[in-house]
Image 1 (tube, helix red, strand yellow):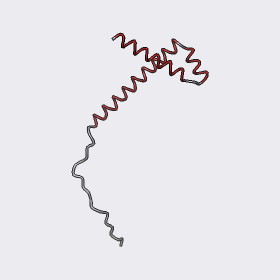
Image 2: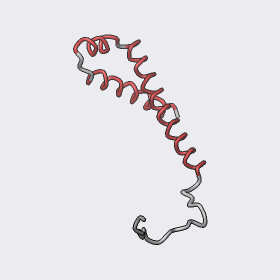
Image 3: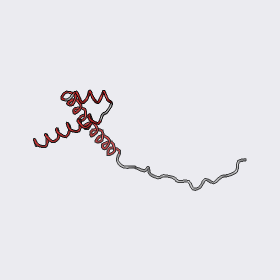
Image 4: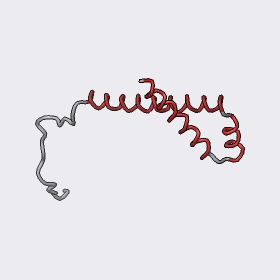
Length: 89
């Protein structure tokens, strides 16, 4: 016969534990996904604009592997677009 082992008191849950509203969490995930999508669209539009208006910067970045001038130009394009939009408003 096997020896008796006491594993301590048994806990019985009377009601399930809720960790908040699941729809609220889904709403946050959707909001973050939309925000990431908007930022990605802005960066993509700026990259296309830069390719059309200043292809030499892109060619140099691809040729040398140095992306800092390309990032600097992208930031400048986005800044000018936002600045122009705020001036318009």
